[in-house]
Length: 235
Image (cartoon, rainbow, N blue to C red; front, side, top):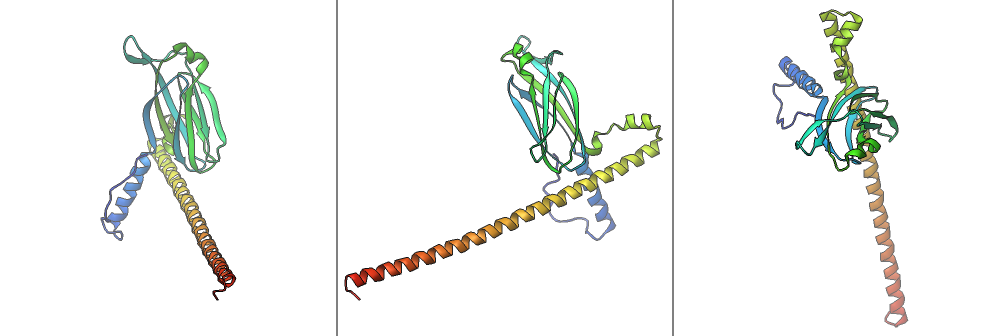
């Protein structure tokens, strides 16, 4: 996902109205990048997985299309209809929330119910793809998260919304998505704090245990030396 990096210092000053506007624009730019388009290559039995950080109660839509490598033409051509892709999605608790087979080109949709890292995996249907043994696929994948997954042209036609009403609806859904993202970041911060506190507590108890072990070894050595010297009648 895209992120704003390399920002040193704060300008304009935080207290100014312009500063608030700049921060708001940066947040909106960050959320505008909540869609990711890419392509990757996959073999006959190979499986590709992607990790997507998603807030809870957020809709995700993935569109994909496949191309099969033509050795004679030495280029990728649209895949045959018989070729299929199996899509599997797991939530942060490793529970399967989507497992379905699609065609060579398709669209999958799911809604997250647990915030965190979701695993999206794709692989070919081996029984049909085995006809192209040794072949390679190029998969174009476009993942849209939250309000970016909505087709507002379809919504406007279905609900008979004017341009102003549609824009207001877009803004409302953008605000709701920002709230979800903020809640997710708070959840991550709380989880990180709990992990840090747990780690610090374990380090403390380990240090105390090491100290007790060293003290016990020192006492044992002193007793052993004392008994040795007494046996040799040196003391």
